[in-house]
Image 1 (cartoon, rainbow, N blue to C red):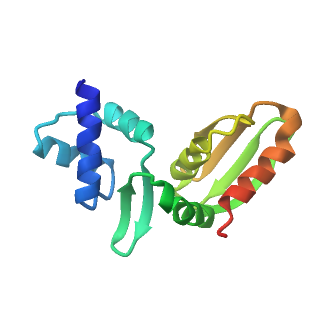
Image 2: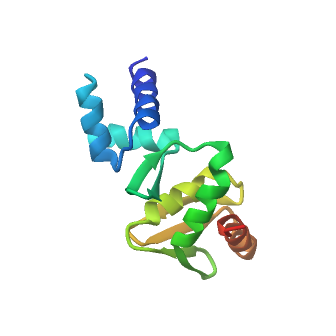
Image 3: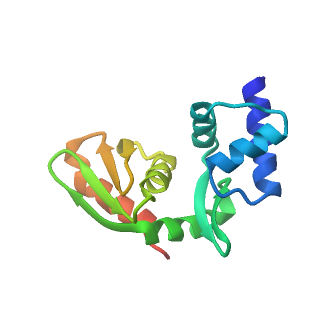
Length: 148
């Protein structure tokens, strides 16, 4: 129940306040009587599908919403610089500091052709479920990151 209550409070805070990053979110939670470790908060953010988007006042953590999917898709698409692959792996190059958001977006697509992603600072490794589907996975990623 503690996890559910904490995640409910995170949703409430994000709907009520503009939160720029996980550290700010952790401070807001502490102000509301919820002490949480950084690793736990990071897992909560991942489970809630939080995305960090750029707004007029800078970056902001947001909850994903179905009706904002195209907006997020366009923003994430602007953060991708290139896609490359070899026989086993797909590499997505992003703007500096945006790989985690792009990787999270790809993971949230929940495509069975993609086993998962690993994100660094400006690079996402996309692991396909079958090497024979590399070109299909690249096409799928490109299609889902297009701005239209």
